[in-house]
Length: 274
Image (cartoon, rainbow, N blue to C red; front, side, top):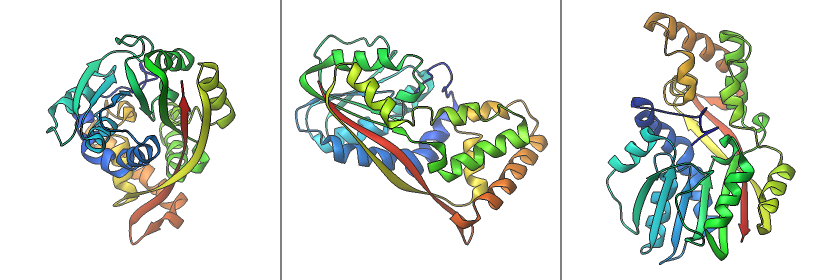
């Protein structure tokens, strides 16, 4: 996962990400992406910006036989991916490397997947050209990116609260998650990389957390936003979490029921062929 230099997790943050944010958020998007990509038994599949491997594992389970390769630049995320028990289905090989210069030959894969990663790449066009290069003729691309931050109310509320409580610009990394929100720009990037039959579907998942506080706590512990509070002593950090939680309790009141936070999260899903 990347702007690869911006979106990095190491050590316990990657463990927390896998334990809490994968089941709450990315597993839902992985299931949607698999339904649309429809991996087939015997295919060779590449998961770009694989993180801790939720998409790669989902593809392997659905395929039964074949080969899945996970590629990520982040050592910590890959360490977690490698540590997880192997599930049923196709073999998964994990590779550390850049999406901008993939360590694979031309025409190596039948299907390339990229979940919630393209928006972070420092050169999106280069990454898409690499995805095109490693696909076989008529190979398939399936990727997703978050839409406008306003269409994910908790992300917008958190970003505003970060700026309010920690100073202007504190939300830059959070807002960057939504930096490829323009569907027309997304279509253009994919088409200009050489892909054809490009379609974009905009869809929504309902995301649940036990409370606003838990959402804030995990955003400040299991994502790159952790850097905002990592240098604080425990008392200061807890005060910041409490202040941000207070902001979210107010701004997200309509999404809270008996303490539980449930909010819509919107993304664009791209399907295309080489």
